[in-house]
Image (cartoon, rainbow, N blue to C red; front, top):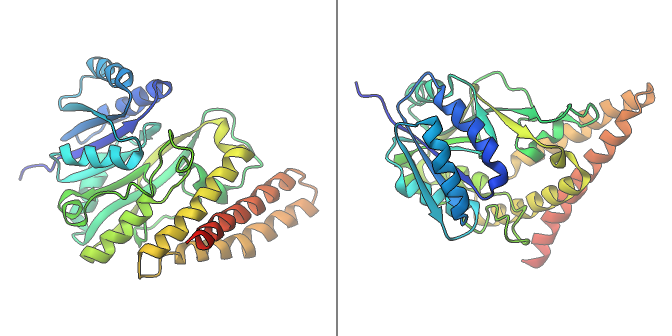
Length: 312
């Protein structure tokens, strides 16, 4: 039986990520399952495309293709990559992620074991570039696209993070392209932190095909966390953009789209905050900063959501 092809689609926009891209490429090269192609899409940066092409001469992927995207934004990058893909499975991996060595093998095995899986996602662990800040609450790891809860079982979920997300190609052909109104565009201040295309796409997979999005904890990657990602400035912008995107997503779909956020809010209000307050009362002063960030995250997600409701 012929082994299915995995099409990796990797986008980037700046030469600052070149070392990260090399780390990702090495982790792909070291996979135990090797029937894949690598499609790199440079977001309107010809110099970056040339640099990554040169990098591949060092890595030596058997099937490597690069393209230059002229319509700025992550959604356009992904849509271009999908249009060029030959694989049965389309894998979207962030340019600053690192795959576990059996990632491709587990991906194929999971798709074969769960025939109703339209897409797969998995565990995303933080890879701290500097020493892990002990005060930063795990419940806010979603802000830099990492898992904020430890899940040890395979289960059907609403969506996955784009750092570790894949779909069957035939399902993508049915569902269509990513919504460019919901994706990152780091060159556009208005949509720089707008983060909703992945949630929207996963919901469309369920609505249009009846297929599931399956979470497999063994489908694990590491996602680099640079210090700027746990600053107050980043938290405010990211949370506000996320809240606005959730309002937009809810307006686009008839099904219940924010049940995950409701469950998360209950976790924060009835577990995380009480636990942090108790630790603070016991003398752990680091919890002052933890509680402050949690409250601000909830407030700015709410403000972003309210902004969408008012403006629409």
